[in-house]
Length: 127
Image (cartoon, rainbow, N blue to C red; front, side, top):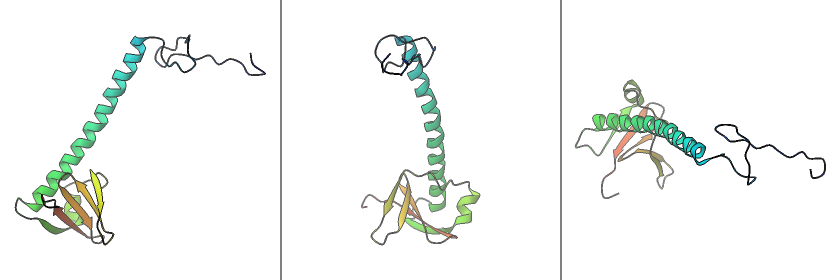
């Protein structure tokens, strides 16, 4: 014992066995370490798959509204909401020179004009 401090008993994150060895050790064996990382990856994959489904659905909604030939159009926010468009999910943002923010979903973007109107833009190869 150093001073008045008691030694800390460190246990395995998986099976709670007492760990022997380095102070920063987290697992008692390779088996416990592998179990932890495999299950962490599975949990992450589930969340990523859900988000990916939402992003693809958002893109499909924008494509359906835009059609195949339009480069941009303006729609009422209610149209997107009726189609269950999820505004909080996007792939990236772009701020133009006027300070307006475009929310991208892959190759489509939307920008809020007001509480009621949304501009939808298809990214072309030139941009």
